[in-house]
Every structure is written in structure tokens, then in C-alpha cells.
Length: 420
Image 1 (cartoon, rainbow, N blue to C red):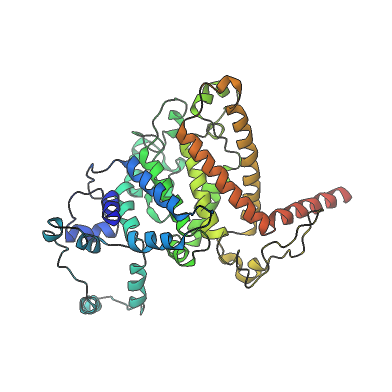
Image 2 (cartoon, one colour; image 1 turned 90 degrees about the horizontal axis):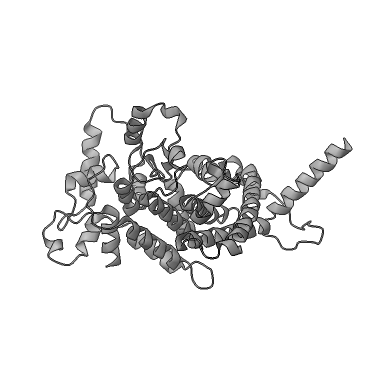
């Protein structure tokens, strides 16, 4: 039942998709018209529920839940999903008696090789198994909820110069774009509408962040198999240039302001640009992307491979030195990692800055003048998730010794400059 509900949530279809349309839909070559079958906010809540189920009461991931979501929910195809549905829906659709056999694959391969200009790569079987390991449901859901980059680019060129407008793409599908900030607007209008309080944030934007958060939780506590699927869908270049540097590290300096404090901070001159008044969507964006970085990159080998390197701190002395400080992880794999040494240094800075900024925000929210107008529940929930994932990130960075390393490097550099 859960699989069937989740399938309908992602595809937003009451009826089945025809064989011809499904092939184009699966390759993200088109966006099929969506039925108003489920509320987008409801889909977001289901994704949040699945993320919460991945983590047990003791704070550790539950592998059985992670595997169930990754294997039985995310990888299912419509053919398998419909076969499990009760009658009459299962008896009157094109997928009921459809089978995929080895003979069909062999015949298709022969037909392709007969075409002119075909050059065999010799990796057909590997590609076939790679397709089977993809998150099929996530792929179809991405094509349902998020527009193509070409469609958004056509809208922008009607307004003006597209080079001056940043359009963030979907991490696991670079030809799709994230929803714009406000409902009913296009990219390029965000900066203007942010100056007008009361704008409604696009609901699909929160759904995207919930999906990012769920993917991170599927790889929590070193779930290597799920992490490998994520890395195949999200190459190291995309992870470093977009996820780490743009979505996470750029938030050092981002200030979050609940709706009831906006007017007062504006009067005091504390809001001068968009980064001084991050809204609920900015809060959700940082917490979800940081969760993905921590669980799928910083929390994965080789950073936590204690069997081959003494990366986890064993003793911290009173003078902040440590006994097992090494950087063998960069010596072993070098530039192939999405997280480089400079990224880790900036990540330490971002976490420290955000903790200080959130402490000031908590102080402002508990002042007597604001107790009669507390922040909305969504803001408090999202803020608590950000505090939690910041704490996890800092504990990992401290445990790996990077905070001590960067502090010692800065101190030595300062002494050298004074001495010189």
C-alpha cells in the first residue's frame, strides 16, 4: 500500500501511463501533464516522514528502513507497482502482462547494431544493471514536479539577459531546475519580490528540499550501497561545484529572520540585502543540503574509514594539540574527492558562523517584546533541524581533527607574519 501511494504521489497520476509515453517520461524527454491528485504539501510531509523513519530513537540510522525505502520504494518501476495493485486497476492496463526478458534485450541489441554508424562500447550489460540500480521513482517524480532548464531559459529570455540570472538545477538531474522562490513568479523576479513581505513561497520548493534531505538520510551512518547510487546520480563535479560550494559554503553570512521580526530589523537598518533576511525556504535549503553533505560525503569513506587510517581523534590535549593528526585521506585519493581541504576549512568557518548567528536569533526571539508573537511552527521545526545537523557536522569535523588543524595553521601563520 505504501509503495502504491508513493508511486501515485510522485507521478501525480490517477490512471496508468501508456507504454509510449512512459519511455519518453522515464528518459526525462518530456513532462506529462499532472493530475491534481495529491496536494504538494502532502507529498512533502510523506518525504519528511520517510526521513524521520530512517533514524532511530538512539540517533543512529536503521539500515532495514533505509534499505526498504531505497530498494522497495525508490527503485520500483510502474510495471512492478501496478502488478501489486488490486483489481480492477491491475486488470485493465498495458503493464499487466508486459514482461521484460533476456531475449527482448538481445533482439534490441541486434537491431541497434544493424543501424549505420553504430560503434559498440562493450558495456551493454554494465549499463543495463546500472539502470536497474537507479532510483526510478525519484527520476519519474523529478520529471513530474520540476521544469526543464530549456523551458525556464525560454521564459527568462523573454524578460531580459539570462546570463545575469542564476537558475539552480536539480542535483541528480542537471537538465531540470529547482522551483523558483515565490509562487506565480519566474526566476529573475526573486530579488524584487523579497522586498514585498507576504509573498507565498512555492510549495514545490519545499518538496525539493525534503527530497534532498531524504537522500541524505538514506546514506546516513555509512550506508555505502545507497551512497554509491547517489554518487552515480550526482557526479563529483556537480557535488563540489553546486552542492558543497553553492548550496552550503555560500551560507556563511546568511542570516535567518522569522516573519514577525522582519519589520523591526528593517527599521533598525539590519536588513540591507537578501542575505540579511533569509526566509523559511532558505532555512530549509541549508539544513537539507548540509544533511546531504554530511551523510553522503563527510560521513562516508575515506573520511571515516578507521580500518585503514587513524582519522578519528583519540585524544585532545589541553593546549588543543592532538596525537594522531594526519591527512592521509588526501594523500590516498587526492583530487577525486568532492570535499577538498579548502572546502573543509570553509565548512568549519560556516558552521561556527551559523551557530553564532542562530544564537543571536534565539536571543531576539525570546525577548519580552516578542513573546506574544512567537515564530511559526514550520520555522521552529526547520530551525531545530538546522541546529541538529550543524551539531553533527561540527562533531565530525572535530572528531576528524580539522578544527584543531586549521586553528593551528592560522596560529602559525600569524606568528610567522609577526616574526617577519
